[in-house]
Amino acid sequence: MLQVLVCGVVVFPGLFFTFRKVLPSIFKQWTDADVVLVSERLVSSIHAVMATTAGIIVVSSCKGNVIMDRHWLTTYFVIWYGVPYMSYDIFAMYLSHYYRFRVKDHKDYKSHSLRTVNSFVRKEFLLVLHHIALLTILLPVTLFFRKDQGDYFIGCLFLTELSTPFVSLGKILIQLGMQDCWLHKVNGGMVLLSFFMCRIALFPYMYWAYGSHYGIPLYSVPFHLPLSTSLGNLCILAPQVYWFVLLCRKGYRLYRRQRDAQNQASPLSSPQPVSDISKAD
Image (cartoon, rainbow, N blue to C red; front, side, top):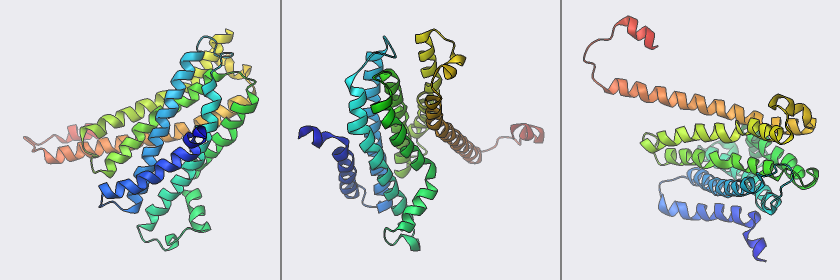
């Protein structure tokens, strides 16, 4: 009974609805869209901390033999927390989308309907596809097709969640109107660093670890693995690269905006030569 109560099916929706009840009493000026967004990000951060912790435990326990070493937490976490969270998060993302348009008095968002669901899927197609891919690829691979091998690499995949708390913190700071503070700037750097290391560089590392185990060079690993494995990794990696590019563009825009604001605020002691302006641009 206790195991059922603490599993993800209960924990994540329970936390989400608890935050939805508590936050309006603290931030009375927030709209429903604000409350749902922050609630979703807080639950995402909690799941990310759990997944990262599980990943560290599994990876550190299975590093002796990355193929054959086992840890019970690998399968347990996927079944009891990974799958319930991914299913819940699709629903939470839909609610965030729904209330974001509802507070703008959009005519199609007076109530839930197939139209609002369809609009959500179209606008957040890549995120929805990513979640569905994890449910249809990671779950079967973890439970049925690994032949009790590769817990180390499943643990590595858990570590991809390390960047999520930083992404969530950035959105929460913006919601609190703190986007100009030093914490938001430092957090932005941590977002880029953690996202690149744990969601992009991690995949070449896993191929390197596999090659080191069998004594084959990195470039030969894709030809040593089943085609389905490399395709599955590509399906997970491709959206990460796309999102990282978007993060870099957003970070650069914020940097340019803050730099321009500082230049406008500071008095000019002397006019800048036109040639220097051209070089700066």
